[in-house]
Image 1 (tube, rainbow, N blue to C red):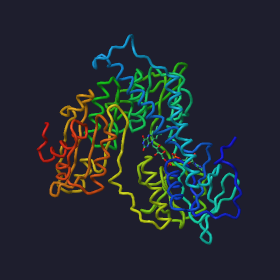
Image 2: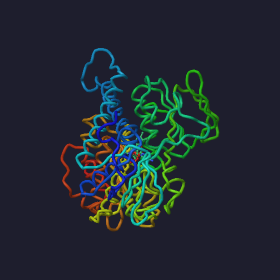
Image 3: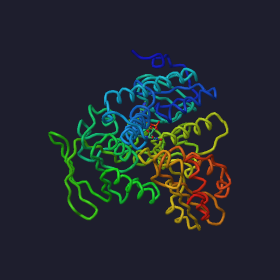
Image 4: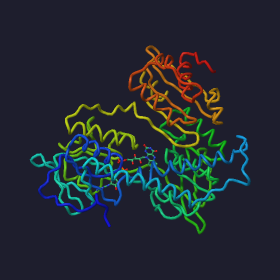
Length: 478
Ligand SMILES: Cc1cc2nc3c(=O)[nH]c(=O)nc-3n(C[C@H](O)[C@H](O)[C@H](O)COP(=O)(O)OP(=O)(O)OC[C@H]3O[C@@H](n4cnc5c(N)ncnc54)[C@H](O)[C@@H]3O)c2cc1C
């Protein structure tokens, strides 16, 4: 039975102020904000549940599994902490899956509540534009119903790319299948060392699987600062994760017991890898086919839609947000902020465009990665004089207390004015610590401002103070 918010409604005479296609983090955030502004809002979703990739097969279930992995890692090291447990810690896969599913369900219900609270009309159906705006009104076909709106926001998200000739199934997996495996595989091969590939590699290694990651580019997490890539590769090696960068996958075959991956290493050696399962994590394609783009003036490139700084496409009254937008990182928080920007613009409220250099990027591996702004190489490429400070967690007392001293905080700053250009963290709680750096950069703080900001002791955040000090060769603890 359809839930209350998914009932079919009578729409012919209604004209919404804004209709949003897609209820992932980009779309549902836009809908909530539109409701808060008092706009008459429709949210069109093809799936039975709201939340999109992020809630159902992305951010939330992966981070739920990651927390299990963390607990299990701690238990394996219990003796070091003076905690005696009788026998070995064991994983109960069914209980882990149940917990993950409960978290997802709780938040999906939360979204339905938020739609009711903000008077958003949720329409269940596949949304397709029937053309551009006519007399200031855009018409959408939503699973056979006509939805008319003065403004439309496209937020249809993305899906995992597959390598040519391969199909996802029970051996070859995408982010969807790997989240609900019947059992923990003994071995896992991963193609792709971007965020999704390294996160699953890290999680399943903690769950005791043999993990091998194959990446075509010359380094792991290629969008990160080079020092971060090196440190991740070092710690992964220490954790027993095999990594091959600059490698080319030649052939993948499914066998009775798993998969065989034939690949060529960076130094030209052919290799054959056997694994129980293979995760293909080679990026995500925008879901913009069949949504009527061709009936409009919207400009696109390989399926990604071009927008201006207010997320408006070249078709008046039609906006695009989230994973389908050209030139923006495919991250939930980017999509949701883009939604808030677009809706503010539609409502005529104050807004600021997204600032490309102030987008935090987080990778939830062990060790975690959090970064914002320019890498050292990108900062050098701008032609300005820069200075760099780096502070290791091994010299931070809280990191020692929590027994997690791999990694560092690296700050890239303008040499003359001390403007913070980029912050790159790998280590404990990096995905939380990065928030301070984003705020500092948003407020245009300098390295000196950070050096005179009091950080509580003993905390991991103090490493930020020392990293700022190290830019001027004045870290206290190193
Ligand atoms: C394994 C994994 C882990 C991730 N972890 C993180 C993380 O930790 N942090 C982070 O920031 N990002 C993470 N991401 C990325 C994040 O999930 C995406 O950036 C985010 O979900 C994009 O939001 P969106 O709203 O643009 O699209 P989606 O979340 O993909 O939502 C799009 C929605 O639109 C619906 N839809 C599509 N077409 C139509 C149509 N024609 N009509 C009606 N409805 C339609 C879909 O059913 C879906 O509900 C992760 C991704 C993956 C795969």
